[in-house]
Each structure stands twice: as C-alpha cells, then as structure tokens.
Image 1 (cartoon, rainbow, N blue to C red):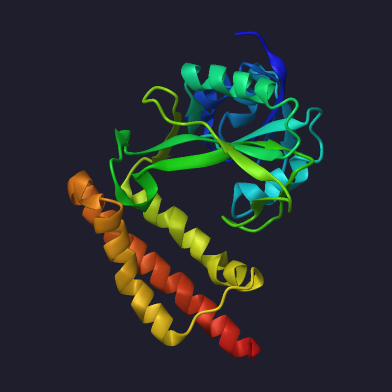
Image 2 (image 1 turned 45 degrees about the vertical axis):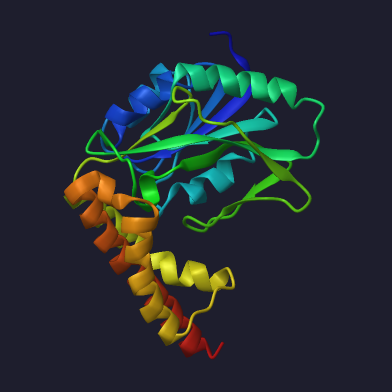
Length: 264
C-alpha cells in the first residue's frame, strides 16, 4: 500500500511480540514514532526494523498518554494515528482511513476520526461487557485540533470548536485490540491503573458522594453484565462484570476520600 502523509505514535513496554503486528499494520504511514518505556525485551530492535523514530523513556510511566503527550509535539504531519502495541488495523480499515483523511482535506472542523474497535480476551473476541460491546475509538487525530494531557485514560480530547468523524462498522473494517492475554495480567494491569485513578478523576473536576459510590458499585455490574451484554461471553463476561464493579468502586471511593481530604 502506498504511504501517505500520516504520522503514527506508539508507546510500549516489553510488548515486542504484539508490537511487530501493530507496526506492520501501520506500514501505510510515512512516519512512525515509538516511545519505549524502559523495555527489557526486543521491542526497540523491532521498532528499528520498521524504521521508527525511537524515543527511550527510562522511567516507566503509568500509561501511554504520558508519552503520547510528548511525542505528538514532534510529528511532521498534521494527521496522527495514536495506537497501542496490542492493536492492529486491518487492511479494509487502512484504506478507509486514507480515503477519509483525503475527503476531509477541505473540512476544517473535524479534529479526530473514530473507527470500529474490537476487544479480545485471551485471543477470544468479546461479544459484550463495557469493553467489548459496540466500541469505537478516536485513533486518528489532527495535532492542531486535538490535545493530549498526561492523565491516565482521560487525557485525550478535542479542542473546543472541533468535532469527531465516525467511520461506520461494516464487519471488516476493524481496529483489533488484543487486550488481555489472561486473568492474571488483566488484574495486575488494572491494579496499577488504580494507583492514579482517583486523583486523575479529582483533577478533572469529578466528585462523588458516599451514596454515589455505593450506587455505582451495583450499577457497574448491571451495566457490564446486562446493558452491554456481558452475559454473551459466559464465564469471562461474568468475571469481567464483577471486576468492573470492584474497579469502579475502588476508583470512586478513592475519589471520594481525596475530595474529602481536600475539603472540596
């Protein structure tokens, strides 16, 4: 596929096996920036093989937003793909991204492009849960109309006055997210997220009462298992629904305690 004036940013740590597939799916970009978070595997060698511009971070941050907020300032092109090493753009979607960017050349109000997003757990496609049900992700952004701040999960957003464009799913145009390999890695990763979740929510202006914490504990399970059809994924869906309830409760209670300590 012919390369176009499009940059891509990847941040990762010790994900060499997944990084290989990710970078292959970005071969249509004329520039790829890879931010390595102190890997001890062959991630940097793989990035070199794909002609990436490599930036090494010796302090391992909590999430890619921290690295992406630095690297987006260094890209050469206006349009940028923000990817994780465990994501792969299929060929149909690659072509749609190219044609969409070309069609938006005279549209100055679009700041990002959302694509259909499919999660996998242990290489098995999720049919439901808050992670697997009808998901889309804004991975293509215009660097002048978009901003990334170093806040885990909440740091990416359009600048005021701009809007999103959505590529509709057709069953073939998919951003594959090979999300979690097993239950152990899933739990470990989200425990790391919890260290910053409450403070990040507080800094974004969110507040919650103790009653709200309790209510959301029950609602989170209902949302994950019933509203977003986690029941379709059998035992995995049940586990993820209970976990989502636990995670939401811990995060909200952390937010509640921080707000109470600060008197706000």
